[in-house]
Length: 276
View 1 (cartoon, rainbow, N blue to C red):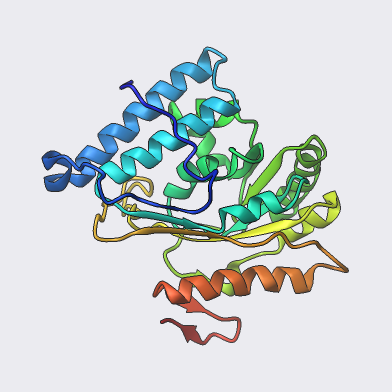
View 2: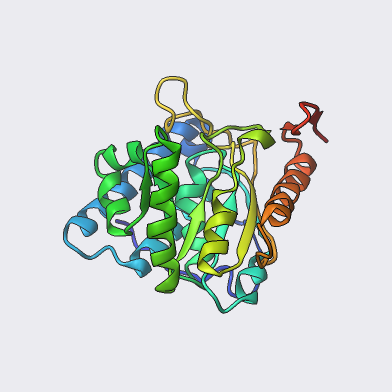
């Protein structure tokens, strides 16, 4: 791997890609080729460390910062707001986000891990991807099948509560699949239920990462669009009271608000569409 100086970019607050990031001529002409070559190199390096038992939480954060560096050097601008909200609770938290592309899987550790140890709820198919599975296994994720909702719920509640009780925060994507639009009916309340059972807050995250588009044949290998920015907004911690229905709607409203501002198509529960 090339020399890389780790910078804790978010410690002092929010983050916007600097204007002086150098994008090579090759990346400008062939952004997808450049991007996937760099990402593959990153995955292979991480896999090697993981198989050697050296892929700890710090290394995961370093890899995530490297992914941010690759995204920016491909020519994509990244903006992250609300980072200070992660620090507003001393407890571990359940981070609940919409799911648009593979990018958030790579980038969220760089945003959260400087402040809280964290892992993911992931679908089982990701644990079968060559080399990438080594990295994921090293971070002890909560793995669900997406085929049996009742069994998945049980797994998330049991292992998720265990992680949270041990101080490990959890990232949940309540949507059943990655999508560039937002469908409220598909956004389940698993994250809120997990937070309620563990007695921890939820922290909503709205994100727009369609610069890394989903592929037609292999979902992780879509076209890279350098004309699209990546956006992340982290909300304030929300304590769960009562059944959690109100807090679940607060998360949905937070995400919908920002997605609408960014021009993302949003479908409400009544079937009506919203867009800016």
